[in-house]
Length: 218
Image (tube, rainbow, N blue to C red; front, top):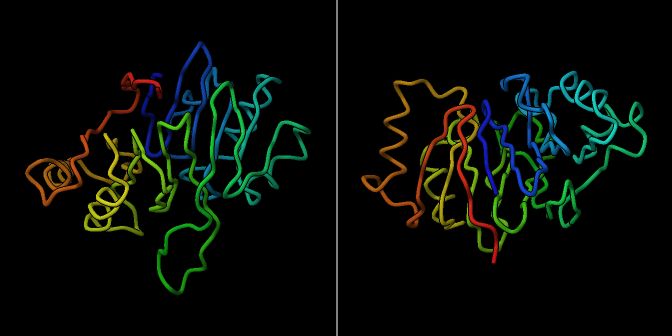
């Protein structure tokens, strides 16, 4: 499986000539959805969900389908009958040849005065877990965790504890558009071998458009 990191929280997975794109939001380059066979969206915040971009992708190719939670599906489903699927925690489905399981229900707490919205994470082919905007623990072994490293709702201590609890084989940063170049070495040090320890995960950051090959599940 090939994993390509796009801007901010967007990830493309490719296998057997087909591709799945997760969270092509407003901080992501327009071409991130080009050629996608299936789209997944974790929640409605604009850095994860760009309505115009999704509509253009669905209009460009009538074979493309979208899986997402209700709050997003309600905004686009009417224009694309039969191609927008509503999912929630505990659901399982196949998209573009990838087996996907849904974990989680709510967005992380930003502030007690801000109402929490819904958020789901996607576990793809029993290998890659993308939690969206939450520190959801899927309750099963994770090979590759897409870890939200910088957001208004988390601290580096939260990220460290999350990595310790999930204990993936490798952790790849997402949700990094707000992380300045000056701060990146600090985060790398905290999450790397010189830091307080993150359960032995191999930590890495990919630039937008950079890819890595992942082993398929046995």
